[in-house]
Image (cartoon, rainbow, N blue to C red; front, side, top):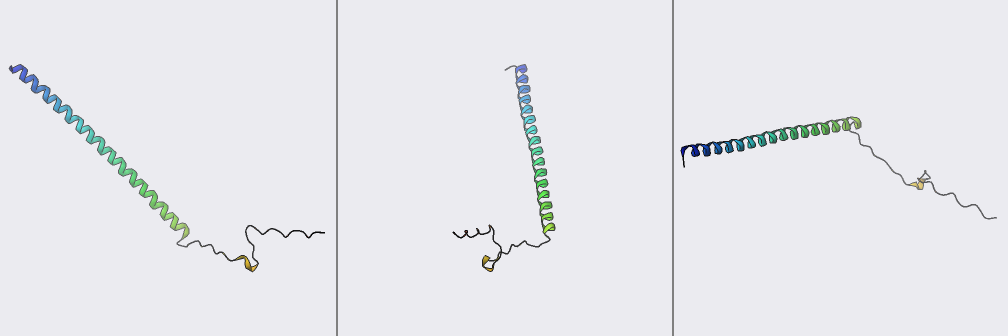
Amino acid sequence: MSHDAQQELERRSLRNVRALLDKLEAEADTERRTRKWLALGLAAFAAVLVVAFYFGVKVNKGESRTVVSTPASRGEATFPPPAPPPAPAK
């Protein structure tokens, strides 16, 4: 192999290695940007959850809302109201 052919082969090999390195660096940059945006998104979501929890507790002030149901046998109103008795036959 001649000296010129050897040099051309070495140059082509170096260009190929450089192109591969550029491609790997570009992929690494893309991955870093993706991780950054993912972390920012998760942080924003966590902040929304914390704020929602805070206001949920603040509105209720720690009190629970309990609905007490009593039997209708004491003459209290029921829902739906009972049907009226049929009219007496004449």
